[in-house]
Image (cartoon, rainbow, N blue to C red; front, side):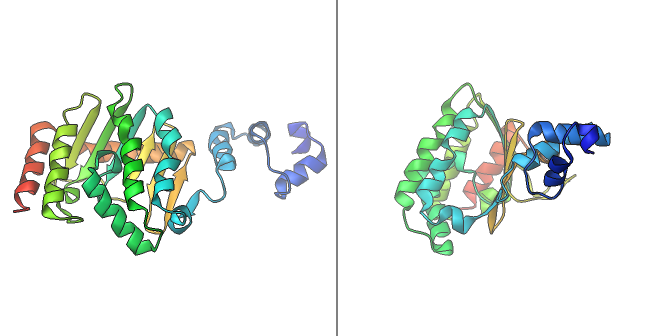
Length: 249
């Protein structure tokens, strides 16, 4: 292997035994020497990806929820195309202050984190200003259940659903709703967000995962496309929201 890559034997040994992390060029050389050049992009991404890519929510939120909202500000500014799938709550981009306060309060209470909900809500609203940028495009796919879960009072939920109807009119926003009655080609799954074609944030109860390997991003993009196929849009989507509002009374 050392001869094929043009390295000293000691360098090959250090990489093989995980004593020295390989550079991007080292990975490309290794794959080329093994005749598997096509695996290099995934291996490079995996090598760059931090060992704690799956970071526990307790660790992320231990200093409060406001800093967590602010931590993604740069990523949001850099991203041009957002694809968001949710099966549990209204996505943060589309939340009203009232809905966000109810949700973040329940998270703080459940996880026992510092109660800075007021500041966290304000930070989320500032972060969501990217939605008003005509240079960015947003595609949302929501399960109908998102419209029905009672995470706040009826008035707050009605206001949230009304806000959702308003956001759907934006030219840079596409919202699809997967009805309970839809014939599915894929199952409901946990929330995830795709940032351009380079990064995925996938949520679990215990941790937040950041995925950057091309094969991982492609997998989630394929899932998003499949989920989109069963989504109601336009007038059909607005009827689902109107039905959810009517059910609050």
